[in-house]
Amino acid sequence: MSFFECKKITKKFGGLTAVSELCFEVEKGKIFGIIGPNGSGKTTVFNMVSRFFPLTDGEIYFKGKRIDQLPAHKICDIGIGRTFQVVKPLRRLTVRENIMAGAFLRTGNIGQARHKAEEIIDFCGLQKFTNIEAKSLPIPLRKRLEIARALATDPELLLLDETCAGLNPKESEAAIALIRRIRDTGVTIIIIEHIMKVMMGISDKILAINFGKEIAMGKPQEVANHPEVIKAYLGDAYA
Image (cartoon, rainbow, N blue to C red):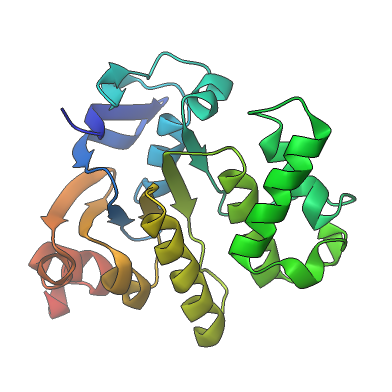
């Protein structure tokens, strides 16, 4: 039994097929990467998994149970958390209060939620910003807060959407270190990222897609050297 599996998932928007019969499995405790050019369907996959979009066709399984008919809040409740490419924290709340909002999924007790938030603040290296309003944070810290909010829901599977986008090399290294720490706690991760250095360095397995279809899947180096992947990113002349 696979920890997580997508079977021929398809999403159509009118006459446009954004994702077409995509299949992949993710092992528990691993980091699974999804790459592809802009518009290839990566975030649409996340939106289908988290039920922001209903599937046009196909099936999704988590720990052996089919989940593609569940509402979005139930997806989070069963242990699947996610971040968003465009981060939107609760702007007028502090870092602690933002994380507490995620913790309330598992408890109605304010003290317990605050304790959970403090643990995650320490884990994510946000101690200096605990009482700062989210609207005052620069993008790198907003992205870290986005991860922290997702962690507060106690996910077993975490979907990370372009966590390193817009970060400088030092900030990217810090983000990679955090992602590895999350993995080391036992959380399984599916990550979307454009920066190949990041994906090559942290992924156990990579799926490359273009026009919503698989073009390669395997170990990072195998995928990076695949002719169809090179063609999708650089064009026919480089394939």
